[in-house]
Image (cartoon, rainbow, N blue to C red; front, side, top):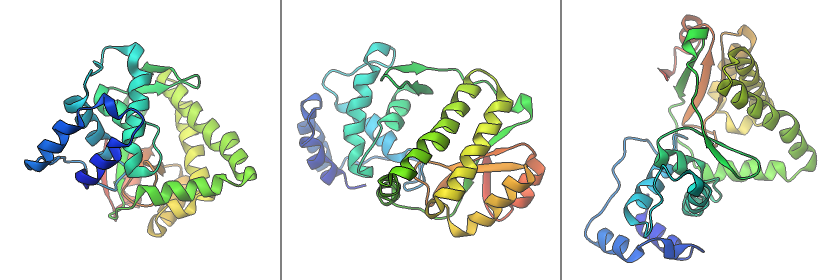
Amino acid sequence: MHLVEWLAYLADLPDADAFDLEAFRQDLLEGLYFRSNIPTGYGLGSSGALCAAFYHRYARQRVRPEDTVEWPVLRRLFAQMEGYFHGASSGADPLIAYLGRPVILEPQGGIQAVQLPALVEQGLCLFLLDSNQSRQTGAMVQYFKTRCADPAFAQLVRDQLMAASNTAIQAWTENRLADFAQAFLAVSEFQLAHLPAMVPEALQAPWRCGLRSGAFALKLCGAGGGGMFLGLATDWEATTKALAAWKLQEI
C-alpha cells in the first residue's frame, strides 16, 4: 500500500481536519510502515485494518469503541478513508476492525452491536477457501456498479440478493440457523448465476457441485474475483473431499 499517496488523498477529504496529518507525514518520513498479517487483495479487510490503525493513532478527537452513539460518525469517516483503496466504501470493514466486534448496519443509518450464535451446535461450519489468486477490489466494484446501471439487474439485486442477504443476517442473529443456511444458499446461487466474473473460473465447477450436493455453499468475500471465499458446510467431510484442491480454514 502506498502510504504517501494515501496521505495526499486524506488531505483532500471533507473531514481531513479530523486527523493529525502533519504527524502522519513526519512519521512516514521517519520510516513508518504498516505491518499486518492480513493478505492484500483477498477480501479479508486489509485496508479496513489499516484505516482503523490510522484512526486510532492520528484522530484528533478519537471516538472510543464504547461510545455507541458516535458509531455512525465513525463509519462516515472510515468510508471516506477507505475510498482510496476501493473507489467506494461503506466504512463497515474499518468500523468492525476498530470496534473489534460484529455490528449490524440498519437501513435508517443506525448501527447495532450483535452477538452471533454458534453454528457448530447445529451441524453447520463456516470456512474460508483460498482461491490462490489476489484481485483488485476497485475493478470488481466497478464491474458490479456497471451491472447495476441496468435497471432490470438492479431490481434483481434488490429483490433476490439483498433480500437473501438480509434474511441470512436476521436469521443468524435470531438463532434460526436452518433459515440462515437456506438464505446463504440463495446468496450463493445468485452470485454464481448473475455475477460469474466475480467467481474464478477454476472455482465455478466446484461451486456448482456444492450447490447440487447440498454439502456446502460458497459466497464472495468482499468484491470477489479472487482472494478468499466464504463457505458454509453442512457436511464437512464431503466438503473437504470436494474442495481438496484448495486450502480451507474453519472459522
